[in-house]
Amino acid sequence: MTERLEPGSPAPDFTLLDQDEREVSLASLRGTGVIVFFYPEAMTPGCTTEACDFRDSLAPLQAAGWTVLGISRDEPEKLRRFRERDGLTYDLLSDPDHSVHEAYGVWGEKVNYGKTFMGVLRSTFVIDAEGRIEHALYNVKATGHVARVRKLVGLDAA
Image 1 (cartoon, rainbow, N blue to C red):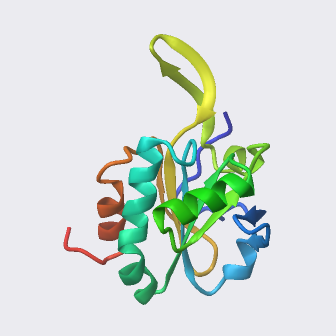
Image 2: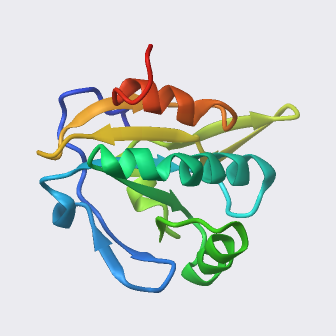
């Protein structure tokens, strides 16, 4: 696993394909705040909960100047099905070789039922308009996580 990012550090740039196989780059979003969340796999229960929570909070996040992006190792076709199935209204990005996951320190050892394996550490990053990390949230829970992000960006009282 690579080192974790700290608040104040530059967010690693990336260019990935979205669910429609269009390139999306972090650099092209400079000037606006970006919330990037990494999730293990499209259409699984926890990931669906998290993705739908972001969907349900998207209007106030966008009104406050935030762009939301979800990143997983899934191929664009699966991301397109996930987006359509759950009415997700933000871009889902494909990182099949997990290089962006590694750059953000979210690819690492996990333990499930006593077995250790490499996988995605569910994590979210709040990136300011200049491309710096404001908040780096590692190993978050799918449920209730978006409410915490909303508080961190000043949408809800702490």
